[in-house]
Length: 110
Image 1: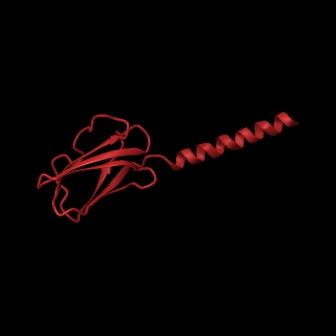
Image 2: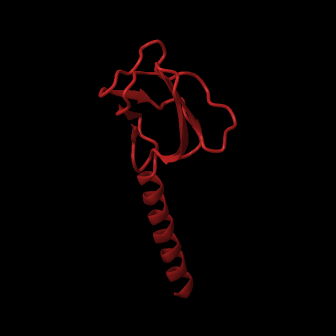
Image 3: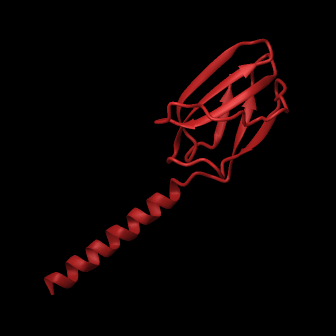
């Protein structure tokens, strides 16, 4: 009887863990909001443990001030936490560290 109870408890814990893991999955895309005064020409995402920034997610289409864009995440691996590096048309650069894109799939560039 005690063994059956332990198995039931372990099964419940495993189901609870799986549900929590599903809630923290990276979405198919993230929204990028440009609240800066200049167009964003280069936007790079990388898992927070990576040392390289990867490629320009905007490709050749700058994101004008006040505009929003959707960036696909289908090729990103590494969990939920990402660093973001941007370069604006005026040459200004900014870095945003350890953004949880699973719980907050919006990158607010201010």
